[in-house]
Image 1 (cartoon, one colour):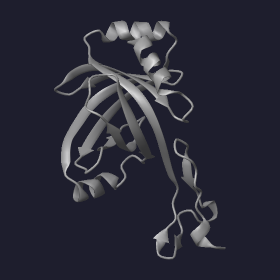
Image 2 (tube, helix red, strand yellow; image 1 turned 90 degrees about the horizontal axis):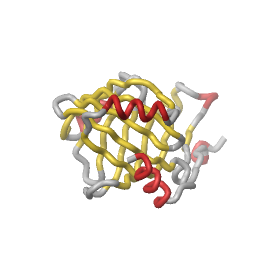
Image 3 (cartoon, one colour; image 1 turned 180 degrees about the vertical axis):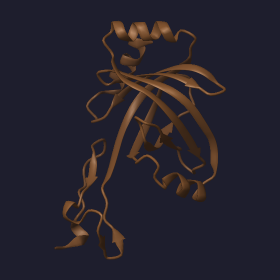
Length: 187
């Protein structure tokens, strides 16, 4: 078997998987073979401070939004040369997230790469040893979905309560104009 050719190349905005089932968690050529899941996508998002969480919940319920749960999240942001890098640690969402987003008034486009992580992995320690921590954000996040649109109601420690609307294009099939239209519809 030619080990140099065991790599699946899949186009941007799709899941990329490297799975070596027969050799998972075994030592080969001095390296552990592992499973990895990476997802790239774009989203258009709107964020705003709010004091109307109860009204937002009622509205989402009336629209039959799919409630995913409440996640206590710690986002650790790192100083990097390009874009933004954060490690999200929660009970529902655990990702290393790199994204590019212009500092403009809302709505904003983000080009995102997500790397699914495991809770309590050593990744945070590695990142903290290699990079400078910019800020740590501690929040309680309620997560809802209507189709491809994700809604967050965030209670952020020392900052207050926020609503976030993200129209997400996971597979590259939704035009940016449509994502913007979706954000503005729920605004």
